[in-house]
Image 1 (cartoon, helix red, strand yellow):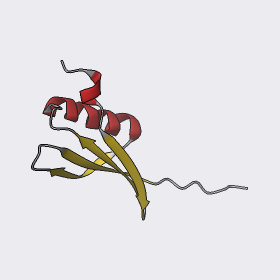
Image 2 (cartoon, rainbow, N blue to C red):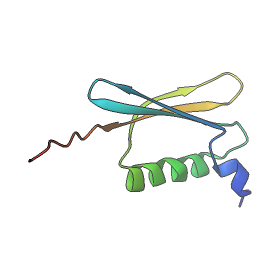
Image 3 (cartoon, rainbow, N blue to C red):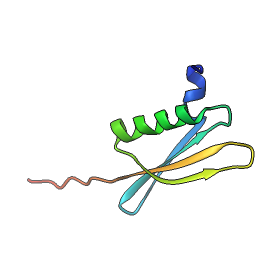
Image 4 (cartoon, rainbow, N blue to C red):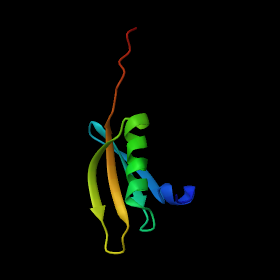
Length: 77
């Protein structure tokens, strides 16, 4: 099993666009595929994120774009 530092994303960011909120998760090349899958599964289960895009770079770094619907609450008063 790898250490906890390799299972965490190296960099996270988020932005809002239209009806969806986006988060970019970067995973280093030293992180195994299984650990990256586990990380994305946790985001999906607990944060209600879904995978929107994946990109693999030449150095082995992977970036995942996650999105979730923005829930707007209307006032009932």
